Image 1 (tube, rainbow, N blue to C red):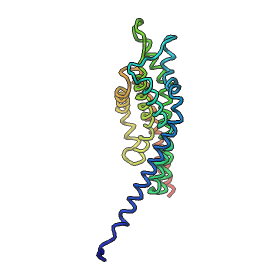
Image 2 (cartoon, one colour):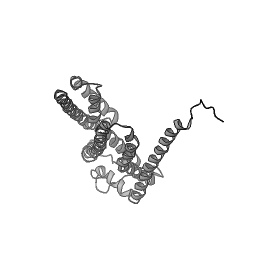
Image 3 (cartoon, rainbow, N blue to C red):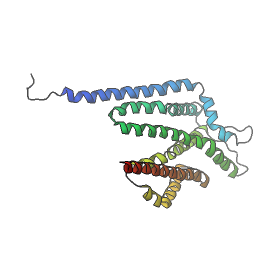
Length: 254
């Protein structure tokens, strides 16, 4: 028999349990979506790998092919790529599940701002991956295949190639998020447009350092990442200025 002066414990625990149950449900929906997409794509795993390998294969001599130096590579490389593509395609739905979980706890003005930022982040990540495939890969592989000795045949391992391109996809996808990061820093008051503008020389240096760390050790690939990073940084500054002017007009109107 409980004491009358003791507050009941169940009401304090119930909200947490409900949140955990909802979180589990959202995670399960996201995982199921990825698995469904993966199962639908697996029949085309080899075709997907061929599509990703096309920027390199198009530059190799006629009759050239990739090689597999490990026994399981012919199976594991397309399998891994198909799983990554399934996650890539499912990202909007996964983020929708995350949004549905956190949205009830946000204010209306936070919702109005968070949703466009979330959508823009997804679009920019996709744009970064597309830029890597259609712009960077042809230039990069052309440089690699033409700078080697003439008596060396290029025979790339399928697993090593996959690891290489996935690294670049991720690097360019993240790099294209710079406008969002810059905009949020300005919006939150952590810094100002003027302060970031004065730090341009350091930003340029930082872009090339990041390009050096995330790409192969050659000037071409480093520049192909560093230059878009800096241009996207300027885009973030531009949106920061627009938001600041809008706020100033609203304050003057009051």
